[in-house]
Amino acid sequence: MLGLLAGTLNGAGVGAQVIDFNADDSSAANTGHFILAVDIARFIDPAIFAAGVAAHLDELRNSARLPGVDTIRLPGDERARRHAARTEQGIPIIPALAVVLNRLADRLTIRPIP
Image (spheres, rainbow, N blue to C red):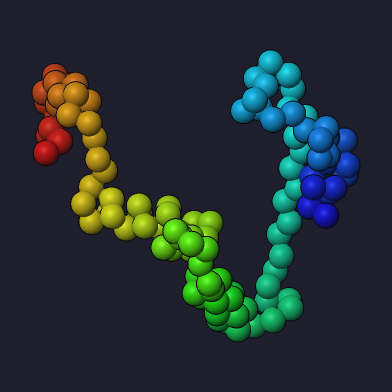
């Protein structure tokens, strides 16, 4: 349904008509977009909705795993994990880049990165 709205509704490609820009970078991808904004409060108390979503996500994360799969990840999980790690430990920078940035900091007379 979302593909139909993202394509047919605005004249873009649908299904096989959409060019995979990862495989073909010379043709127009002809992709469309569809954005839906929903005011949850018009349907249900947002706290009840949030609790329902959390319960559903917990159920998905705790479902049976295929052999060799240790963790079930959902969209946003990895980003949240990296954000927490980088907030606590900082953003990793390769040593060569750190040298260049610290030379620039020295020229600008600002504090170098640790």
